[in-house]
Image (tube, rainbow, N blue to C red; front, side, top):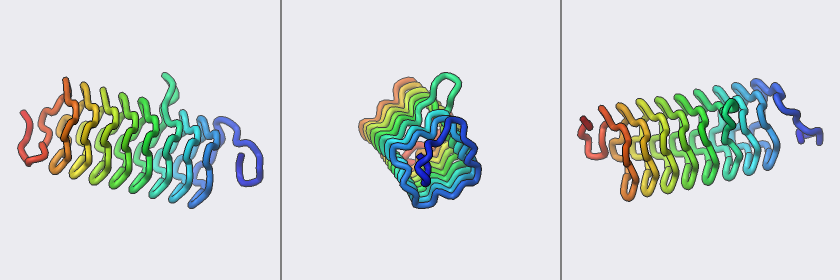
Length: 191
């Protein structure tokens, strides 16, 4: 429902909408076009954002814990170039989500499912990804400087030329991960 109590229909065009600080908890925004929307500090806990287009959206400090962000085969949650600085995505399901070049600095992604997500050139500096599943994720050129990856599952993840300098990898599973050219926590470059 929107602020007037009306249900938001699938494929609703909310391009550039201002939802700063709004309570959108549990709202069904499936397939909504939120391109360039301002969702700074918005409460999206438990919201359904399956297939939503959040390209260029500002989700700084947004609360997305337990939000439904996974995608069906053709419905990819699109956060390309989105700002998620300091966002709380704890326990969120971002299965196959597009987070290409997203700014996730300082985001809480603890226990988040990022299975097969596109994190190409994403900025994950100082974020927490402990106990998250990043299997098959594409993280080419991703900046994971100082990221907390303790106990994260990175099976077959693509981390080509990723910056892992200062990342915390204790207990992380990197089986089959492609680390070609990646800068490792101690500053060495992986062959």
